[in-house]
Image 1 (tube, rainbow, N blue to C red):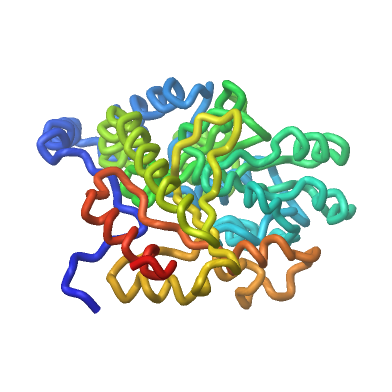
Image 2 (cartoon, rainbow, N blue to C red):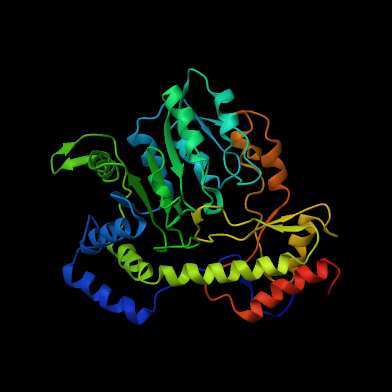
Length: 371
């Protein structure tokens, strides 16, 4: 272990405290801390404008948004999803007493393979839950084609896809609903937080009821809802974050290109290419460690840890390896398994210093026999 500072795989973007203080004073003056205050309304509108969507409902976190999305569309039975994601994706299914069915991913995109979906459909299948992994667009056209043939709903876990545009349009408009996370580790954060992107005002109204215990008005409860509302403090932070989000994404892009130049000179390592036709957000820096590299992925992971560089194996192990999913129905998962055993996400965030980048570089160079 070294005495150097710890480098994490990501670091939250934070506003200046001096910028936050006036907004806190306005919250204190209003006395309204939650239940759709002024900052909540402002952030919903500003996010719609920035993201290029018509309707958006804020949540206290992305997981509750995903749980609510399944409720809003009245999903039942089986839902086809990916084993290559954070566990919140499939946990939301279990919380809704739904049965996940896991199918393989495309090795080029790390996303659900549409060619595998049709083989997994049964009379019990009601929906597809794909993920835009690392903010890379899933094959939205083919997924929708299969969904239309079989009358299935499509809910996108877009936790990684804040601000991503695909073929000139917001990626968040794909499917029936899209779910965002504003967790501290994400490109855009409100400390904790999330949102549900809705296709129309009627769907947003139902979502708004569900996230507020099901209340339609003071005396009318229309559904067994939950308390998923975003508070005023989170919304205030979000307004400040949104003002600098383009600068933050530009910083991420610059660092990603720097990593590309580094990795291009090291045999056996491959950085995920930027997706075609996409304005990407550079949410992660996925590195694939191949058999041509002198050390294994896990040995490289250990080398980073020894230098207090907390790279992460996003996503390892597969969701299907966790005890609560081992009995779930699944098709063969060779691509997901192979990717999970090769992946290593490198530190990537605004403010990563030149010195910290050189520390990451030094570990890779040494492991490649060039140190």
